[in-house]
Length: 141
Image (tube, rainbow, N blue to C red):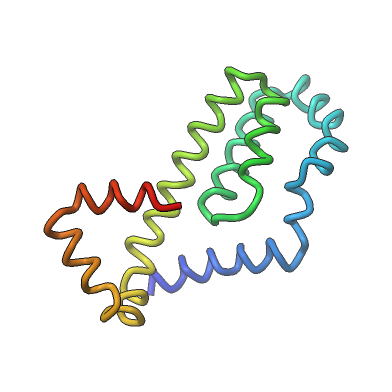
């Protein structure tokens, strides 16, 4: 039951993102047009803007939404190279970890049921030579 609720939340967020055209917000043009407003917020509330940006970046990464590259550029523009790199590194790591955890613990059973026969050779290979398989998968685009 708990898995169904979490998967439903993730699916609802994905549907809302595309239904309300929120992908238009994560474009260079949109960020350039709101750069002055964000700079003003940053001058009055620097920590809140940094944490807000971090949370949005985590959500974009965890939900595998388009826009992470644009947000990375925006982080450098808004927070400078050092702080932008720190924020993006933390947010992308946390977001990727969340995406992994969802795939591993919430979606694994349904994927195994649907593609189990096709995944059997991959699962066997990972059990026998896990490091080699992971290395090879990282090289595949």
